[in-house]
Image 1 (cartoon, rainbow, N blue to C red):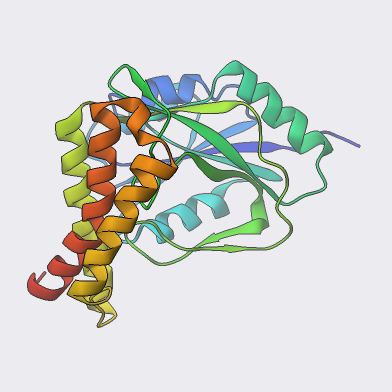
Image 2 (tube, one colour):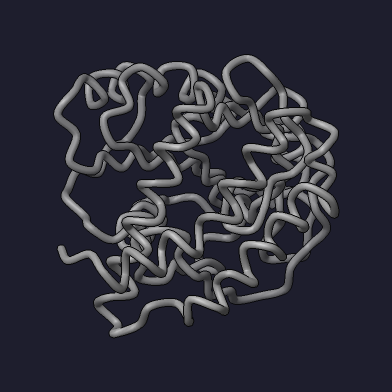
Length: 253
């Protein structure tokens, strides 16, 4: 039997600065598919220069543009990465080896998160940063929900073991970038809630969530080991539901 075909999928919006490095780490795939969402910079030329197949459009819903990208892939398997992520050679080899031998439908990938050039491995989670993600899957196994941020997932088929090698994720340039991301995430989530007539619980409920989320990130996930970076991660994770609740309740589009 021939080896399964692998598609590498990247969804991007005006990522001309980060896209070249991302795509240069995907040459091990049989094809690269780049979804360009409302791009006005040089992302298209960069994708073409790296031999990528391009899908262009305008999407307000993250789940919609990601589902469009999956459907555009021609491979048996899809490796989904973002423009701020790099696939090191050891992970690339493991991905090819996994799709050639696995009987499962999808696998999670461990993530090394960087703030600037600092590796920050502890404290991520609670809807603010990812320690791992389900990025390798058979094409028909994964469907994204229709949300602007952190869409839900529908799976078909069984989950396999987590891969052992890690993806490099350059998530934020600095602490100011982290705070801007918190503002953007909470604004997008609040819009989703308003459209559904929800506010993500009550004020007292979100006060409790602030405490539990801070404890989860700073203590259970050992954010304290990262010094000030772990503290700001825990603070942002704790504030996310409360900010979202207040924006959903008091802001208007």
